[in-house]
Image (cartoon, rainbow, N blue to C red):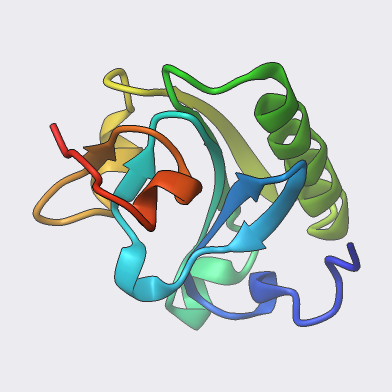
Length: 130
């Protein structure tokens, strides 16, 4: 995957990718805050203001669902590393575990985080939230 193509690090805001079939794919903005327990996510937060980006870092989070398998974790870890390399290390890395997220991570999702049972395939069927 060519991360540098359309690299969101040049734009302020929140950018999220989900592990799917050993690849990382962008999450649509309308789904931000919804996290499937069987997946891993990489979340990049880039400061909005021009002053904030001068010498300041972005936050790069790696979120692990409680039912995530080794393949999903491996894809997310590799993507996170490549993304960090593309951003030339101008990031602060955070590891987030389901139900144990940092205040920084939770602040991106108002009114809150929604955990979804299963994975993307189950989203096409019935999905339970907790």
